[in-house]
Amino acid sequence: YDKMYFDGTTYIDIKAENLFGEREVSVDISVPDFTINNDSYGSIDIHATEGTNDMIDLSVRIEKDTQSLDVLAYYDLKESLLNADISILDYPMSIFEFIIDDGISGTIGTTDVNARIYGPISDLKLQGQGVIKNGGTRIDYIGEFYKMEDQVIKIDEKRVDLTGVELEDHQGNTAVITGGLNHNFLADFTADL
Picture 1 (tube, rainbow, N blue to C red):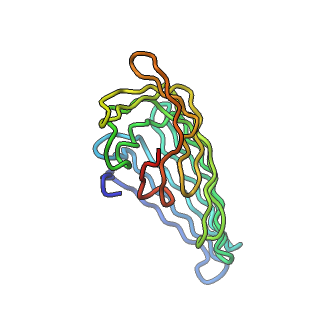
Picture 2: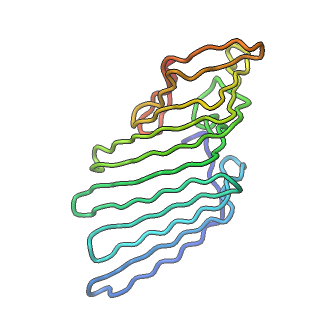
Picture 3: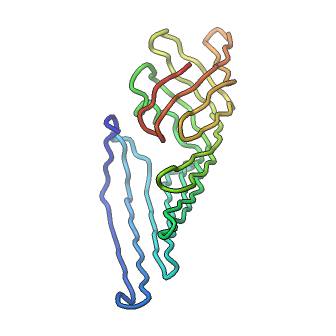
């Protein structure tokens, strides 16, 4: 993401046992103060282990105050299969200003997301659903700020589907979105509304 600058001091601990037998490797990574474009997103803790069963187990937690992002995953080395469960709570909607090229500003609110990434590495799938809480953003082209409260969105590997999301302007007028944001597995976002 060329609009996102990641920063934070990183600590890494790698342990390997039985290198010449049934090896077990574990990696712990921590970033006590992780920032994106100088905005703090809290701490990151990553733990990965590869045991004797040709599987890598992975857990990731990014946490700050009430916001958290948790990933529990396993990767089958023999079959090149990934299965990951993702839970996001109270994540700031303003992060979308980093990934949408232009057109929005002043974004507020949070989102909760439950999603799953799964399948062969060559053809990963993403399925999930989110809820926008106390959200809002300014559509720069129109010059209007729109509120979105308790709105459900759907996510897959190609689209953030906003169909049915209700927007409310400063006069209380409502509009319903048809369409969403196209992407290539959470990269190269384009609006299709």
